[in-house]
Image 1: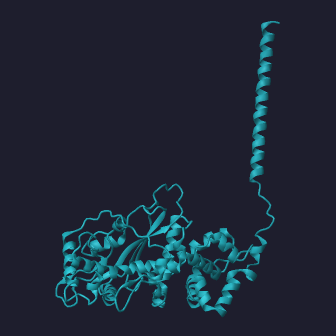
Image 2: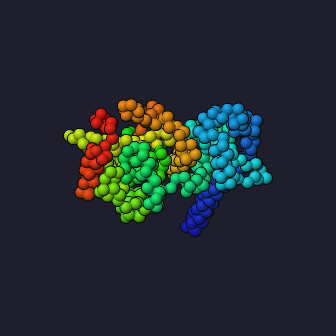
Length: 431
């Protein structure tokens, strides 16, 4: 065989090899394309929705149980949703237009009343979406959208009316009058504290939300008046922060430091002539300022300092009891919320708004839950809410430098509350 024949044979073999490789690659590509088409092919549903969900009008809690409670057992209705029938109808008339959906040619939309009832039941119990699915016969995938949407609607509709920080001296004076009359502590414009809300660890959050108590949480920081109403609420800071650190970054502190909160000018205390600035009362976790009073450190206290701490604690306990009423009424706050932090924020804010609405309409409702004093001995008797769960407050301090003016103001208040001008008859027995 000559050289030309050999080269011709080699060319034919190379051509055959290349053709075989090309055919193999083409076959693989076609097979891969076919597999993708089969995977993405729309699955034919056996039914559009599960049949037992369609029997909602006959067996669902909203259509049956709530109707029975509204007509036969108003106390049961109030216990079921933590609000009475009248307030529910008012909420429905105001919030309903914000959460109402339009029917389509494929299905009828869930009514606004059903959406509101599901949300209130979740706030009242903290039940899982799976549990609410079986109770109200609404799919879990729908409930996970209904609850956050309705909470945001409640906040948008009611918060500007029932949960807004005073901006004028006259309103702050009204808050101060409540503390003077009820708690014998003067020139006070609110009690401040923080509360942990337990949450599931957010995705890829690591230890950011892990608090010193040993669980993941977000923090509710609140300013409360003498009637257990929330004046200012800050929700969403991660649990690893101290409330001193959270307070240093919030808008309330900036307004107080810049003197843009509308606080009245210093005013003399009763039976005295020395002008004293108005201030917030808080615990040791916060910085001492002229506009924020906290107790003396609990070490080597004199009798006067113990008396001052007692008088301040009577006023500061208001915020603890407000948290207690809030969590006792909306028991989702006593459980771990398996929601993202932004949805937790909406849920907690909605609870605070509803709490204020009920405190305004029914100021004596749930007052039996809070701490109260024995009229004869003035000893503090713990409220029922303290049996639910220990109040989750923060103790770690951050940026807690005091000022000389604040120390001097606290010393003056100490002298005032232990003098004949500012003392009360029973305080000597309390230390």
